[in-house]
Length: 318
Length: 266
Image (cartoon, rainbow over all chains, first blue to last red; front, side, top):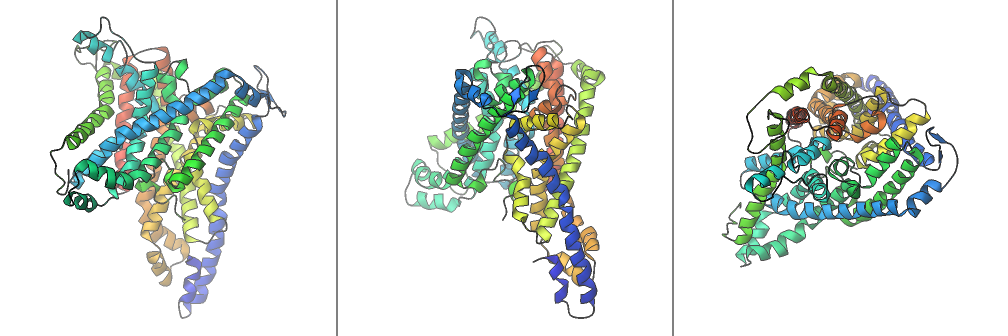
């Protein structure tokens, strides 16, 4: 198993000289762990703890905060209709986006997986998820141009004579829904690709040979087998949408602002860090509960934005 | 459709149509951006009125855009370096030596992936403010490093799994010391995975907005922050030109990472 035990199995005089440095190496190696683990503790765990602590502090308008133990931030978040509505809206639009991504991503990915040529399959997959790394800012901006009155669809519709004057659709509810779909569809495709690819095409052939029409084959063979991947993808999209700031803030009007936008506004514009922290804790609790519940449903290893990719292979290993 | 499943069925045809519609949906917005960036007028009218490089000239000559580009590259370079060294040490030690709580350390390293960036950003605001060290570029570098470390960690761990321990054990059996084995056997074998992981961390840092905005948005302006701010306050094709540069740069880096990792997907 471990390197340091290996040399002892060698017969001969080498053994004694080889074991000692190996054991020393093991000690040194474990000592090296202080660097990554220390970084993670100091710059990941402690900031989260700090956020939790600050959520109980009292805000001093214009002068930061003072240490205290008050529940007023949480009381405010729950008692004001505005913040409750924003949380409910966030849940709704995230669920809507998960359903839309699934409905649109499924036929696409199914067709992609069944392409006969491995080369074109790879090209198709690469194209489909190539926008995944691009910053949300550019992707949202692209849609705000496309849906604008001055440079986008508004001009085309006006030119075609469909509308009497150039009309814009961004920012607005339509732009927000389309933008969220655009941004998270690649994650859905990635998740579906893994599970659809795992289905042996001979299963479908067998079903067809037994006389089932394509629709029946799909309904009784393909769909049930792909359900875990589809569910995992939907959960992923749901959780990612709930945490997204950029899309609703660029493509939405205040009526489309989700929890991340409200939180960021509190922290950056109102300088009310304790209240922003309290709402972050609430959002994190909701996400954690939903993630845990759905993770149990679809298998927690699959609740990873990059599950199904080679990238994720090493991570969730035991 | 593949492997003998050939049906002239309306379902099959609608699926084929859906495939092309989705591909168009994914690429039309980016093509429109490119069109806007080459359009001479302030606004893109339809039909278009010619081609011009003027917005790209503005982009690469004004400090409004050059400073953020420099900041972004610096943060991406430094943070990917830290993220990759963290990931390399963690992956290497956990896969080659018995470590107590090793599984917990690995899960801790992966955890930033599951946290919404906006919450991480608020946590950094609270943390850096509390230690009286806010708004610095160092803060941004460290936050991006920790937040993006799961990617090199995944790739390097996968690389170590793939390579196996046989070659290292052979080298040890032939009398090589552990340090020599590491330098001459293990590291060369996983070099491509290390570089691919570093590239992913670099790309993610370059493209990250909300953590950067919360950690140092008012003092250190990165390219996504400048893009966001300028599309709030003005509508200029320079933003489209900057976006096109962003798209091409990201595409080139992802293609490089994909080649190095021997295919990131599938």
